[in-house]
Length: 293
Image 1 (cartoon, one colour):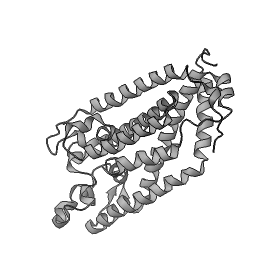
Image 2: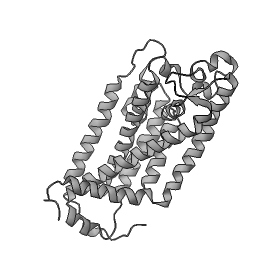
Image 3: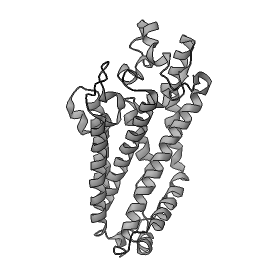
Image 4: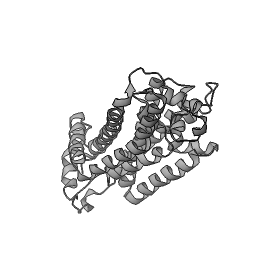
């Protein structure tokens, strides 16, 4: 059923667009704004108060970079994304007939393209809101601000405060803001794509719950290990996603090569996609009878 059809870019794009429209219109999207409220309270207000204390401005991208390099938010951001994605890939009683028209390969690639579109939208939305919130106390110099580099120097009694540790010296001593932005966006994107690929593989193997459990273990255990100095953390996606963890404090020496993190994600994603393509041929879509929510 549909497994011998040729791959069609037009059909892949059509499938991804259909899924994207349904996703963006889902009432579950309200959860995203709960994340934004938390980010505003946890990061934006802290940086705003620090800028006020120093009588200076933040750099416009710093709040987003703080989000993408926070050991707390590196757990929360993927968890919210999984919640927004729901029971990906969505199927209902009409899926069998849909697959007959498009072909299984086109359907699986369409789902992957949709996942990429969804996570890109998700990260861009976080970026846009973080910049908008920071506009009153930020500028576009693209240099690390005093809020990031000198807050603890001027207020040594607050060395252990949140704002003094949002963007550590392991980041601003080793990378420029634009370099950090590139690493943060690309590694987060790969992390979310890996999560989507695991969910899709769980579906293709007929074990949705297994996919969710694997994602939860990778996120929770990986985040826990990322808080330690153990090299075991590099076997999990969380540490590979946080830019500053790859560098030492001062010498611009990489503790773990960033290129290895890109290979880590790409190899896992490619393997999972290969499994998806092979497994989807044996999947019996005729057994799907439940309708979408």
